Length: 389
Ligand SMILES: C[S@@+](CC[C@H](N)C(=O)[O-])C[C@H]1O[C@@H](n2cnc3c(N)ncnc32)[C@H](O)[C@@H]1O
Image (cartoon, rainbow, N blue to C red; front, side, top):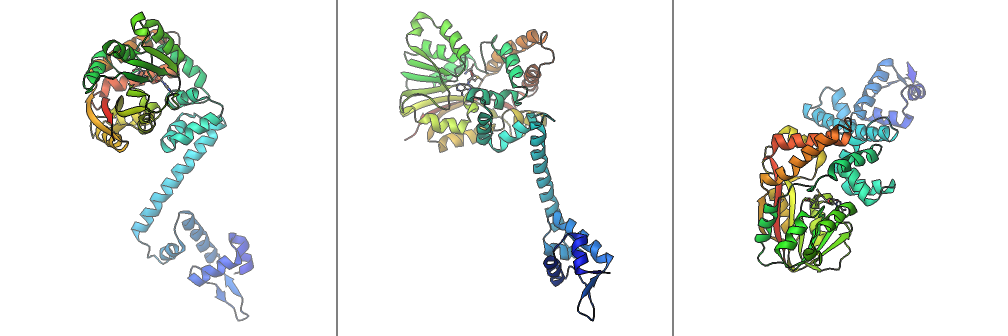
């Protein structure tokens, strides 16, 4: 038998805690004639059990019910669920520390953190010394600080040889242009890449066009392809879509194909809206779910690659919330996918010979397989909007 002072040592609980437990009926010492309480090994076992139940999230009241065999199954189920969630969080935290110590891949952590706290994730990357372009590349492409440079070198080897950097087609761009009630006169093409849309817009309107991208090499190619006639109306601007160097109401049309996702569609809608004149147009394309029941493999893939992917209805709702009227929207043709993925597939086949174990190549191949297997469950949607009052 043990006195309370011995019990405190054996179970690591304070005297006042033990007395409190005793008051709640969780512990029953045997009071001696001299006033001291004595406790048995069974009491110690009961306290160990109690500590474990508490670690499992049970309140003292629930512990008491458990010890009295009166606890409800639903209470235990709820606690178990909470415990599983806590463990998952701890495992995520552990994965980060291990990855930062070089003991594992940072990939999963980057993906999870981006889903949980995208802005904080980006800020954190910048604090690690990456500039915004690198941080965005890390977020969207390499997802691994340790492998980043090699990944991007491989990625650019494939993409520099490509014209289109996202699904799009001339027919779809012109279709969107034809739905505008009036022909714009000042257009900004954001995330223009090598400028397929820029050149089409220049050819089919008389507008002054500013083509913006943060990749100078893409703008250089666009510059080389501009004919003298178009050159006069197109200005190239190497800038970030997150911090566009233009005064409010500078444009009557914002165009952005396969690029708004980079800063987040909702953020793009609100930030870019300011650049529009009253009743100005915004035309953006975005990857969306086209079915309520997509295949598991497609869901798993896009959860990693585009966690903010939405249904068309959800995006339309966000667009209305952001102060736009919807003029039209349509799903990009299969041609748009074909025009992007066929050359990409050919480039990958070419490049793979010289870099067979590249992570970038493996990722691109995975994306191509998802496109080939599941296109139709998802697709690009072109949204034609007008700035509301
Ligand atoms: C998927 S590509 C689409 C390019 C082009 N609109 C097309 O359809 O071919 C996205 C483009 O956004 C550009 N980009 C990425 N981050 C950017 C940023 N922060 N500011 C401006 N452009 C950016 C990339 O360089 C790339 O050209």
